[in-house]
Figure 1 (cartoon, helix red, strand yellow):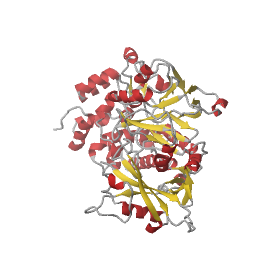
Figure 2 (tube, helix red, strand yellow; figure 1 turned 180 degrees about the horizontal axis):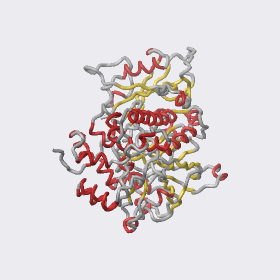
Figure 3 (cartoon, helix red, strand yellow; figure 1 turned 90 degrees about the vertical axis):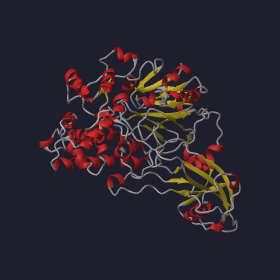
Figure 4 (cartoon, helix red, strand yellow; figure 1 turned 30 degrees about the horizontal axis):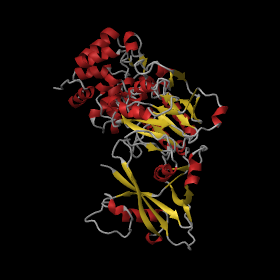
Length: 585
């Protein structure tokens, strides 16, 4: 199953090298001056419309499209879509002709939701003698003029979208370094290859984007910089599952020995493939923040590595990439700016999801049992997960054992053996040999909203042309997306303050008020979200004086559950979310 779009390549009758690009509509404004003041630069792309299925029996359309009859696409209503596209750019149906089916591109497995496939149809304006005055929202462009906008770009300059790149430009720019994989992938901007690979990530996503840079020509401009690492190729976040390691090996094996591996952070869905790369290319160099490096086990990587802290530059085939320290998702989280295309790889700071005006997604898209967060210690799509809950310092083997023994033993272990220190965040040690041997080596993964806000503003100031997340699709409106994240988090804090001012005294009280219209099965994971915001409000001294510490931990909630002071449906949801097999009677 997939949805389909039509992209129209409308040729200039006076210049065969030129085609029509339309100015793309930006997302709607927020209506808040602070956010609306951050405006993305103009984006130009092929005009396009959604393809709908033909209603009723198939009939000959008014547009004769050469080559379409031999495909399985005749079930779609091309007449309606072409008419809408022509109307969009100010033309009539009889203004164009010579329609040809060019290609059908299937989108890679970015998720969530159905993939979006694109059908490319080419045509021309027919009257050569007519003076075609294009509306202000359209312009004629050639492949070369598009390339000049796509490489060696300046921040806030006009941009070219992915439809023209995937449909025309990539075919015209021949490269000997395309990735060797049977998986679908996307190359946008040119030279930035994104391969979604199945990983142990959190729902609603199933893949982690492997980003590959492998320039075929070397530029000299990198010689003026002091680089922390040089290489002929770069891969970012090899985090695929074990059953995809063969595909990862196919990507890495043909690459030069001068390979650089960059890791945005240490979570398993970003480093699970490191061992494959190290075995295939023992000369490769790993770059990561020191806080990430110390959490990556020797079983994953034990050879050449460089700890970075942000501000350093990498030279890959003569192209410069700038490392950016961006804490928030983790305390060692990094981003990477590809200077030539001004594309920003944001790691897990943001995700690419096709939900209009979506929030950070906790209640819209995460239903994975929280027991799995204990086991795999992910912060999840929401950048939070169970790691944010203030439950004391724990060791991986203890968590594994307690996971199997049940919730009551888990609580008893926390209280009796480890104590319950509200001042400490939940910490895990890594499931690697070195850390198992050193049982006192734990990591703090408390998500800090203040860091997240600061990193977000840092990204906005960079004015990237495109955001490349490690989960989901690229985002073409970076400033708008980043402002939406800020707005949603701040809106949640206002709701929390209002709940506290109206009498909420505990974590579950706050959750019950601000999520009153949400399925209670989602209240428990929502509590970690709320707690993070409460901590941030406390840091800013914004909490009412009488509520400076409104039940930061889950201890009170758990006590109320076992004392039957919480409604049965919420108790049942708690047990289900913990995935511990406890029935609610």
